[in-house]
Image (cartoon, rainbow, N blue to C red; front, side, top):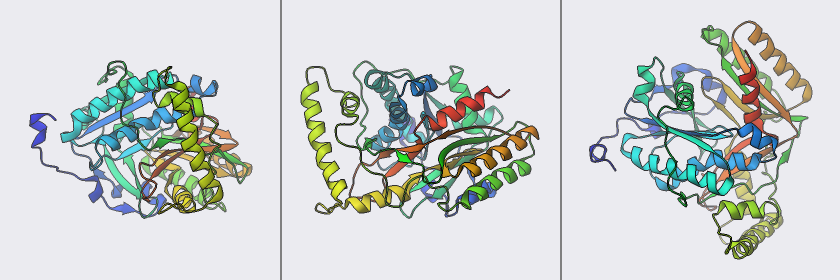
Length: 388
């Protein structure tokens, strides 16, 4: 820790931000509070993620995107670090006293993703003060998805500016030396894809057009939410009893490589993973409690804690809905774009996938990120970028 930062008193705590119990309240900008200038924005994204997804590597892309969140939470288990998962990347807010720790974790994550997943991760660390110095703001709200888990929501345009700055080569964080690996305890992707229950799974990004009337934009976004929340499942892509676990042999080699096994230890690592995953598979398939652990309770909490909708100056959703509803949503967005109010990208697919961070199966505060099974957010973002 930097000597100057060691004595820096905390001037802001994310856990003190009031919790919102209704997702529609994230559109009320009066509920957001400013993030102090002294805080930092840590972010990463998979370079050429769409190409990797087209090659069938969407699970690896999701794991790479979530790795930074897991690594920072493990490095700073008691710290106040709100985060958001973007499908092919992640963003965290970092208190000033933890800046150097997170920078080191970022560097290790870049190296691990390159060596274990054969993907390139772009990473950056930018002060909130720099965001405001360039004419943007950063405000935060806290949405309580369940009694034990909440997710950060953002407004002010600060995260979009930070992402663009890092893509321009500013505030970048270089990879750590070869062989470096952060602590990724609890990071997994061991559940089956969940087929759409109401027609299809829709991944959607809707952002305000530059200079658009803010109230008009919020009215459009509110209309989209009302449409989705009127559906029988409220758009939730996971069933109430959670997804089924994948058989232990599926994805085994990829998980072994992700664990950093060397070639010589590969067979032993595969055998160890197969046995541990096989035991978990039997427990989840039978639903029989083992000591203090209840597979059924875990799956129910997984569904309740799932992060399938978020707000960062615009909506980012992965929801299940009937085809007719998806058509209406797309028509609403096309009309709003013609009116100069929003830019959007969306992608339709047959199922959703979930990436999990669960350091302890005995606690109820595990977090789970939902994305579309055919590229979801990354494909929606690609469509967004193609719009003139």
